[in-house]
View 1 (spheres, rainbow, N blue to C red):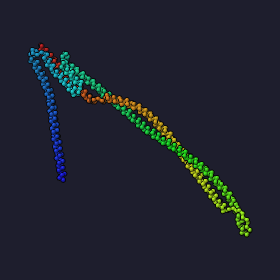
View 2: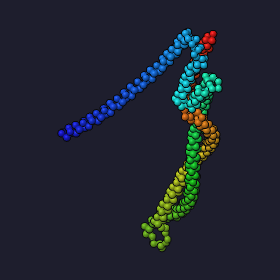
View 3: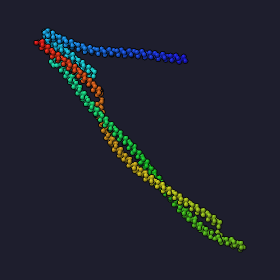
View 4: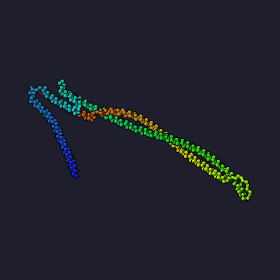
Length: 437
């Protein structure tokens, strides 16, 4: 019991140590997560605050500039005409335009980085070059930048439309091809099933025909043996009948002769015997019939006659039974032979019909397989065209829409700044004109 308690205690302490270790790791992870969350929250809040401060500062700057300009126009027109030229005012306005163009470049660069677009990165480089050097030839850099943005937007919209058409084409072709492929595969499967079933049935029929032909051969062999045995037994019967009939006739004739001999002289013999009592003198000894021996011979011959008659009747009865059995078996064999021959005939016809069906269906299946192979080849090509791409259509569509939206936003900023500059230029012209007056 003590050892069990110590073991339990040790296990509990080990579990406790493990739990405390896990708790320490969890607390550390939680603290790290909370620190990261706080950093992210403060960063986001700082970014939002910086953005809001930037917007407010810009608005305040524009308001201050407008207010200062109004004051200057009202109070310092003469000093302005003496101290500042139109070129200086235009230069100050141009700096605002440069700020707008720089913002456009930044927006395009951010779009390029976000969507990993080489085309947008190239566009940003072109805009940056126009911003730096576009005004050297006397051309309007705003117009150039706007043209670049318009061209890129038009290009992206064209690509989006082309991809939408391609997506519709791919969806239609994939759907039609898959339906056709499924139909052909189903047709091949059905024909294969029919061919397999027909082949199995044909093989079964041919095996049955072989079995029937074997049975017919055995039946013919048995009938031939029966015919031979019947012929031999009938020949033996004829011989036995002839012998027995001849013997029976001979015995009957012999009996007739002996009966006539022995039984025809009985009265004279009795007279002689009775006369012996008359005390006549003895006659000389003469030959007399051996009546006892004659009776024995007659008895034996009568037994022989009976045996011959019995054997003849037995032979005739056996012959009749054998002939009846032979006739019965022969008739049964004829019926069995006719039935089996008809079965062979019909089964051969059916197996030939099945073989014809198998050949025709196999040809149809080969044709269908050829068509299916062509469909599979086309399906593989259409999949390579429509599916095997590093980016699915939905992602490309979303990315392109984001790119177009970002470019339009940049164009909007540029147009707003252009309008602002144009208003400033017109006001500057009016101020210069007033000063000149």
